[in-house]
Image (tube, rainbow over all chains, first blue to last red; front, side):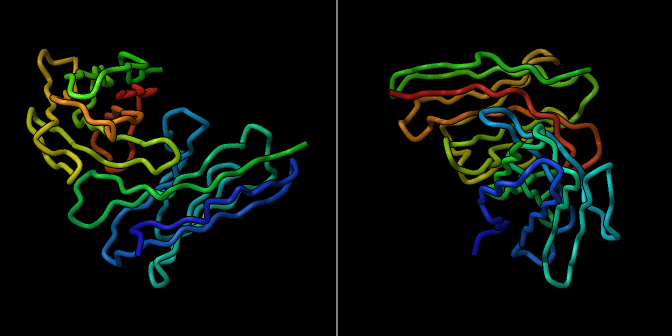
Length: 111
Length: 113
């Protein structure tokens, strides 16, 4: 089983739509969780950390369900500029600052 | 805004040649990393570096790889004898103290022929 698993997509949505991505992780002792964004052929950029109680940053909401080993990202009112690959990232317990990446979910926001 | 810079942006080399990829991390950051991404695949951890030594490395980071911070600003990745399967985008990253919040450079694309 992959350490971090994501639906690769692509998710094609119209501008203004709400879209949600899910991610599962295999190691129950994972300690920290993040969403990164990667534009085509560019570097990953931190979108947001994911806290146990869930957290929101503008149009973006992240949730963590430790019991199900599941992380989600909700994007409201999608913009064309949200088109990118969204990477689910986990730090395993004892993994120091080493990030384990999922393969990413591709989002295409269309007019 | 401070950023991580990498050179070269693209390097083409022959199999068996040595390659050095260079990075200038953000100046007040303490942790430095190399990741790589083979085309169409996920980003993979190679090595982390703190306090002038390797703090962790992956199985990919074998004896052909080495890292150095020669002068307090540059952070380099050396591949001693490149193989075809080393072709990838290599990302340097740095972070302050908060785990997981990394700043990545734009990457160095390595093509091994």
